[in-house]
Length: 232
View 1 (cartoon, rainbow, N blue to C red):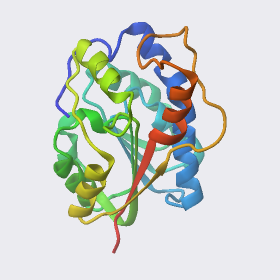
View 2: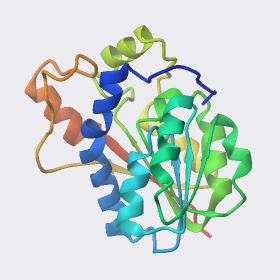
View 3: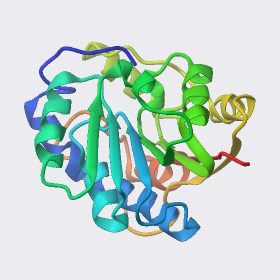
């Protein structure tokens, strides 16, 4: 993740709707963390690609961690996150792409990341960073639908490249293997496997679906949650 100096990730309107589109996935991620009892009150949370801080805000409200750390290469989004997190009771730190070096060894109890792996070229380097900063017994939860086993990824990749983003192909097994090589115990499941599929086809042309079948397949089958445990 290199530093990005641009005004918006998509455009102003799409960026404004991004949290509304992602909140259901963030809640599902937080629900798995809660069900697994992977974060106790007073812990430390790191969000890789925190954008405007929406997922960190949700985790703050639900788990009351002592410290929140966000890594976000998009300068404008990081500024918005800083303003938002200034009202949190937890200590908050926001870094750009170089921020990994500012995180001490074995300090973080929970690492999260939502739809960020497709912007990272070196999975081994990422997993090594996660392994280094996790406490023994800590977990990383990385949600991703933009992977090579999702039939929609080829179209979405083209859309992102047209917007000027540099993206990378990763397969689910490649992601899990990178974690295992770094000394993490990998596991995977659909992020959501029940409930309503939320989507407003009039809201945006980005990340569109050709049919309801494709929408359901994405949200309940291809949108994956990877869990990596830092075993003692």
